[in-house]
Image (cartoon, rainbow, N blue to C red; front, side, top):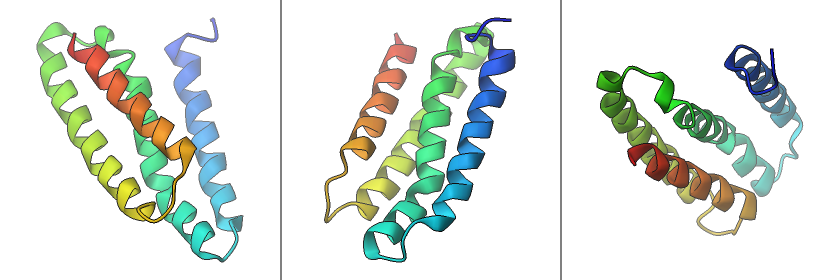
Length: 110
């Protein structure tokens, strides 16, 4: 197995996301900490969709359009949630995450 093997990559990502979600409990009880805590599910979802889109070629050709449509819906949904959460502040990591998800979607559509 290699580090790029989906049999090891997805479990490693899941472990990372679980650790991140658990760590979010300790975010400070401040407006920024509350925003970050509320953002965790959308952050995880956008990362998962971004990584999944990189493997879209592994799906049967007939299943790809539906998968891309579902990914587009999830990206739009979680982008809106994050944009709403961070409307009054700029978070460079969130902006990059959203840009990466949109770039992965565009690449999958080619």
